Image (cartoon, rainbow, N blue to C red; front, top):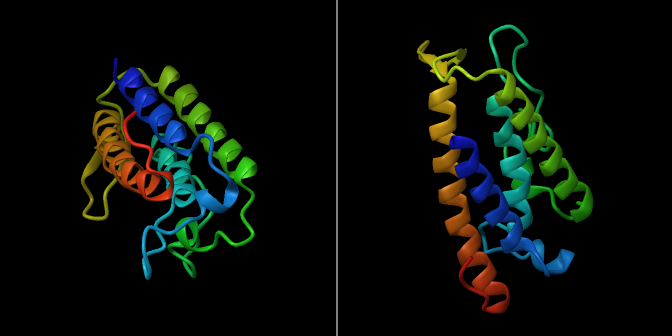
Length: 152
């Protein structure tokens, strides 16, 4: 059931991006913000790694950001190739689905917070649903700014 909620939100983000040019997907919300639809896709590809960080294997390596460039998923879009970034997002989603399919127990502990608290699969699902809902709201505003499209 939780996977269905997440897939709905994942699909919503991609629908918000459909039919737009690369230039439009890189259009900032308003200066000086670097928030863009493509940046949201890249950010959510990064966030999907929450499902794959576990105590045994450790953290998944960042894709678009680094310690030196913590907002690289949003900031470095000049040379970004939209098709490549969308494909990366889809790969990250598929990796998450595979991970969750073999880790069915929602009480499985996958990590520790900075404060040392356990992070369960249940917590990650809830966090991901919140994260997608929040950023899909941003995507609504961005899309409306670009071409006036609203709704699902």
